[in-house]
Image (tube, rainbow, N blue to C red; front, side, top):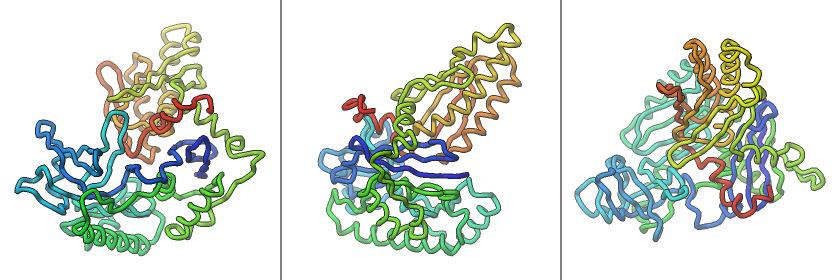
Length: 410
């Protein structure tokens, strides 16, 4: 598969577009101000203080900065690293502990922090508290088993190791070299934490556009095109220190007369990814509506319904629209970075064999998503339930303020 990445700065935002075989498959957006201080980013590590405990929901609220209270699952207290303890219980008001932002603030929800601190590299992750040795399920089973066997000597009661998908095509020695470097970071951070005051930021995550490059699967990557000189210089500096072997992928594109937007139609793709409706070639369409609790995708036959002349035609037409809708729904979920619980309401079909074919096809398309995505079941009402791991804010939330402030700019 041929891959490209486009990064452009426009309308006071930095947007990253992932392309596969010429099609834009992911869009990520961040404010230019993200580089400044005061932002609490995914991956930031702090010394926080327990401000409040709510036993009936099994949660505590931990302050990482004056007035910034974060949700904390109390089940994680047993593995937390405390820099100051106020009582004998697993978690007490006034306790100070090392926490990492695992979910950024969204709408009315506070940020979520975890005591299971992660140190993420290109090929591996070291996880405090979770002591297992794990390997990405996207790596072939024989290679997974080999990794687990070779890494068994690293097993300990303080941290675990997860081998990432990027490790699939590199020598084992390169992976272990990174593990050693991550382990040194782990020891250094926790060694220093006991000497730091409350609310100290022990480690700042890089801007999200840098994290995108660090985390992306590089197999088949042809080029990373950057449409801004300042951004190019920053990214080039990062690659020199962290991804020196991939430095040749970076390309500065600075043609003012024909910018990246025109060359790759990025603004058109962004507009479509923020619309409620996505059209299908059959004449049907999807209506995509995020809510506070979940996202609903409704499949409508649209113009395709007019072509049916009999019940048989209707069933065949419904299957055709549903199969295309399954492929497009999987594409839109990834493109818009939808996560959590997703409910898809396909067109009703009478034949069980058709329903099973639809579910098989949908699972196949969802399996291509690099983010963990699972088709859970189909309910008695015919609604298909999906869960997708939340890694960062969905696109509509990333763009929300910008849209309110200047929608006409798009």
